Length: 175
Image 1 (cartoon, one colour):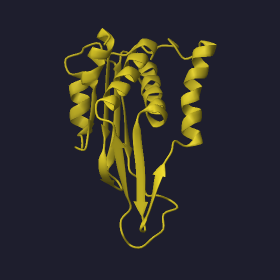
Image 2 (spheres, helix red, strand yellow):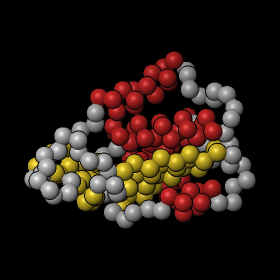
Image 3 (cartoon, helix red, strand yellow):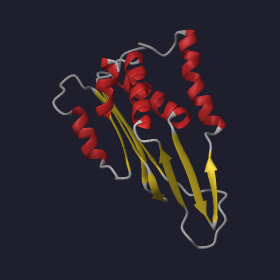
Image 4 (cartoon, helix red, strand yellow):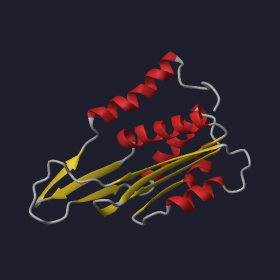
C-alpha cells in the first residue's frame, strides 16, 4: 500500500452513523493557518419522485463492501490531492437504512484558495456518484428498485477525464 493511500484512509469514514457537519469541518481545518477556503457538500435522501404512494414513508438502503469501499474512496482522495492544491479532505458516506431528509454523504475540502476547494469537492462527488462501490435501493409505496448512476452523473464524471486530456482545470487562477 502506498504512503499516499495510507495517509488518505483516515480521511474516509463509511458508517451507518450520522455526522455533524460543523464538527467535521472544524476538525478538518483545526490548527491549519494556511486554510483560506473551506468547501463542504452534504447530500441528503430526497423523495423518490416517481414513487407510488401508499402512505408509508419512502426510504433508501445503501450497501457496500467493507474495506473495499474505504480503500476505493481513499484512492480517489489520492487522485484528488495529486490534481488539486488542497490542504485537507474528508469524505463520510453513510450506509444502511436511511429515511427521507437523512444525510447520506459529506465531502469537505480545505485549501488556500476557493477555486481549488470547489473543484476538488466537485471532482470527488462526481466520482463518488459513479465509481464508488455502493449499491442503493429505494423503497416506497410497497415497491423497491435498485438505483444506477444517472446519465447526468456519468457526464459530470466524464468532464474530469476530458479536462485531463485537454490539460484544463488545474492551477487556474487564485481566489
